[in-house]
Image (tube, rainbow over all chains, first blue to last red; front, side, top):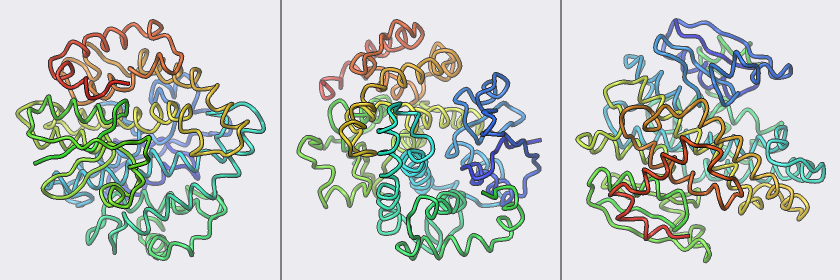
Length: 206
Length: 206
């Protein structure tokens, strides 16, 4: 059976939504980031990068949201969570997910995880201070250029929607007013009412 | 015809290698990062994130290396640049590529692109100072846990090999001694002798 390694308020929510949407059989394994469980040797065997999410499968472990999301979509084709028959549309979705991973999530991480990239307290403070600006810039790109509507990639719901929802939930804590991004906000509200999200969101309380 | 938007010494080399390995017909469009061409309105229509690489296809534009690399592999299946018939092996490759994109490339970017995430000159200096440490930590994970051998993902060459080669070329400029990572260094040397790389590397001089 699949097992999702997750932490509350982390980006693992995206993979969790995908598993629910796929109607997959899975179990959850909670990783306590406050206790640094993600750096323990037993977890580093699961994901040597020491991050959540990770997904245990019958074949082995997977990490990195864009890879996990695509794997879930490919493994449960009946759920139609990605444009599997269209290499270009699939790549567009992967590009969107990769933007969320490598630019948006990274911008957000400079608030609480600035110590990954600096040591000087002056630097840490300045990196935290800039997060509202960088996160707003990211969501301007999503709002004005990437979001197709009504779902992130167009007419069909995909795994990208759960990922966008996951990161859009961070706007307020990053001191960005989500009302600046009406399409993203409407999407976020619609996602919050989706059955899959309502069922699992209790595991992801901040 | 495919058109690759690239810049010398950028991660676009990874996509360029994939196009050569695929024996694709393509043309090159050089983006002058020093002149900030990647921020011009005409380029933002190609990639609203203002980064290279981007790939123009008959269907539209793609950005983000992991998405572009997978698209090239899927579009040229005879070149066997990815484990296309095995969803788990494909996802493992995507996870590796996504790690390169969202963790390794991001670590590197704190040297010359620190101003993305901070303004204070003290912060910029401290972020640059830490890059050798973060890049070395990334390559320790690759060397000891991710690299399978003889190619990145195991017995078969994949698009991940060109991407790893691209980022491993940055070690010296990030003040990391590549001899600390013998598997990565041997792979880098082997990649440098590959016909595809020898043909195109002139476009990627630093």
